[in-house]
Amino acid sequence: MRIKSLRQLNFHHLHYFWVVAREGHLTRAAQQLHVSQSALSSQIRELESQLGHALFLREGRALRLTEFGVLALGYADGIFSLGSELVATAKGGAGLQAQHLRVGAVATLSRNFQDNFLRPVLGMPDIRLTLESASLEELLERLRAHRLDLILSNRSVTADAQQRWRCRRVSRQSVCLVGPPRRGRKAFRFPEDLNDALLLLPGRSSDIRSQFDLLCEELGISVRPYAEVDDMAMLRLMARDSGGVTLVPEVVVQDELKTRVLQKYCEIPRVYENFYAITMRRHFQSAVMKALLAGD
Image (cartoon, one colour):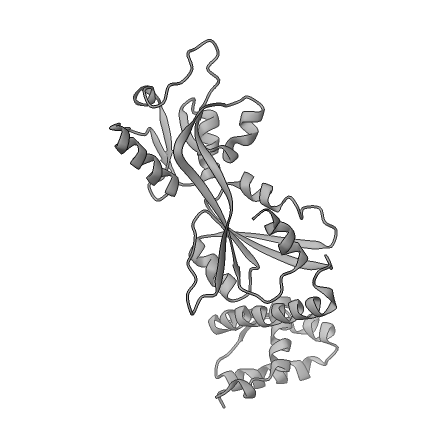
């Protein structure tokens, strides 16, 4: 019998499924839940009957989630993580009690920025941190399912009636041209020296690149990049090793500038990279999230 309404969904059975799915083994889950293995199997079969879909495939003594089981686990993660949030809030959400902070970062985002942003909570003994990397679209799906608490992105998103995002700009970084130290040579002139430079630029999908191309168009300059690189971590390595001139937010190469492996030639006027923190709208916000977003 398929479930026709939320009232018919047995959350007790759903919790049993959630534990088994996370353990991947019926015996270990039964021991954790303090129930017999046969009772646990029976209740999961009842949940499968109600949902009208198989949740597990047996592979020897182990269990593997079906395609529907993977989908159900995503919802269960959201349901029970919200339950944990409720308990933490009831116990005193203003305190930094032990909690799991799950952060998603857009795959091309600067690692230095991520580290700088998370620094207020790094090393806190009562914080367990998970950091995931994926496309913005994939991360938004995980945030919607309450599998993430926060997304770091260099693209903003807009809330609507269906998607209750809260998107705030948490940093605005200058963009500069960097290259090897120009010892004994004349200072780099922008834009005059662009045409003679071995130029490394962010990919055309980058907002920085769009701003830079527009500025060059306004200045009547046509540039031919030696390389176009979407990933900021790769652009950082190429800036360090290629001997070329690279367009990057300063935060990306902060370590190389500090150690003088690279030199900052100039800041590019009217070109910036914006960094955003995306969360779901909630009535209560944990102290950890408040600490991270305090610099908003």
